[in-house]
Structure formats: C-alpha cells, structure tokens
Image (tube, rainbow, N blue to C red):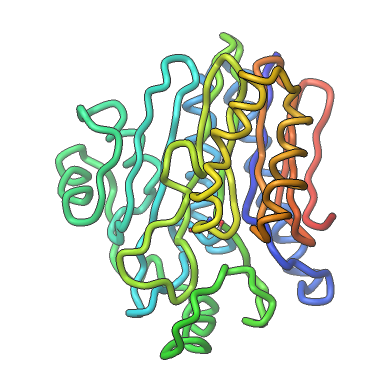
Length: 307
Ligand code: ASP
C-alpha cells in the first residue's frame, strides 16, 4: 500500500473571492503535485523522497506561501521555515528564518542527514546551506506582487495575519505540506511556509517545530499542519494526533477529528491538518471554510479546496 496527501494551506477560502481561473490554477497545481509524488512512490521512492518532492514543487509555485511567493514580515522581508521527519527512526530536520534558500524543505533534509542537529535557524542555517551545496536564490526570486500588496495593507499596524485572512482581500493562500506512506511501510511528513503576513522579524511558527506543525512515527501516523501557528504550537497539534492513536488506540480519523473539530475549534485555533497512517488511510481535516488539499492512494484520487 502506498499513499500520499498534500495541503496548500487552510483558511477563510471562499468561492466568491477566488476567480474561476485561480481556482483552476490551484486545482491543477495540487493535482499535478500529488500525481508526481505518487508516481515517485510507485517507482519505489521512499516516503521521505516523496514528501520532499511534493513540498519542493509547491515551494516553486508562487501560488503558495512557501519558497517562491512567501509572505512579507513586518520589515518587508521574507523569513521562511520548514521541517521534514522520517517515521521509521524519528530522524528529523528543520530550518527557520531563512531568506536565501530556494527550497527550505531540502535544507531541512540536509540538516537531518548531514549535520548532528535537528534545527538550524537564521544566518547559521544559511551558512550550512552553502556548505551542504543547497541551491540559493536572491530576494527577487521570492518576491510576489500580490504578497507585497497584502503586506502593504497592514504594514505599520501590529497585526500579523494568516496569509488566508479574508480581510486582506485574499486571493492566494498557502503554507504547504505533504505526508506519505511508502512500499516499505515507512511514513514521512514535511511542511514549509513563509509564515504569517506582517509577523515580527524573528517570529517562528508551528511549521518547522517537530511535534507542533510536523510529525511522523511509523507506529502511528505522519502529520502536517496549517493554521494559526502560535495556537498550533501551544496545542502541540501534530504530536497530539500521534498520542491519541498511540496511547488511546484511536483510529487516524478519530484522532484527527477530535484534535481539529473539538480541541482546536474550542481553542479558536483556525486551521487544519493532513495525515496518513501506517495502513495508508488518509485524513484531511480543517475547521476553516477551506483547505487546499489533494490525496492519492491505489484506489482513490481527490483534489479539493472548499468544505
Ligand atoms: N502555520 C503557519 C504559521 O503560523 C501559517 C499557515 O499555516 O498558513 O507560520
């Protein structure tokens, strides 16, 4: 059994705010990404390779708030975060506050495989990227006019907004993530983001934090989150799904439903998550009007935006 799921962010995504052209572009990007990563799994790629590939494809697309097209912080700069985790041995890599790395998820993987550490941030992470031969890009590469205008609207206020906040007249959304099960029975998860628009310089969200926004464990599941990072950190969301399965014996669907529709909703934590368990079951849960998402298993393929 192989299986893969991806997300491109959750939030107040309303049909009336999304032109038919944009909707088509998102559906196309999500479907192509999930098919490409699934084909890699079919050809024997590891879950780790598949989630890195899926996240890279979305980082390269300006449609999503990760890599190219990341949001602007309060200083008008990009600061990107990413993480990757292997469920077979709990090895993990994460980076935060990078602004010159073309694919932050690949740097996270290099931290996991080529350093003795799990998490590198800022200048040190970029120095490590150079040494590890990770591709860099300049400021212009990451720029996206829409994201810049979004930031201009709230620059000077102390608001930090999810990139899918409707008050920003949002048309583009999207922290990205992927979870997969491979032919060897290994699970993996990866998440990458530009964070929240107008966030303070130095702010790090849930996405690169192992256990909060990203987690994988072959005994249970692989999880990637999207939503209001501060609240997802406090609720240790991804690890919470694992714990409910591991300690309480819940199924993947029960655990995800409880975390998203009960705990997070009660805490007014907006967002969602994607997860896959060791049997290849997929869960796509969110408490917002929409989440960019797609999944593929041997028996099912699905791409959707709205509830
Ligand atoms: N969770 C991300 C963060 O807080 C934002 C998102 O999912 O869109 O950085």
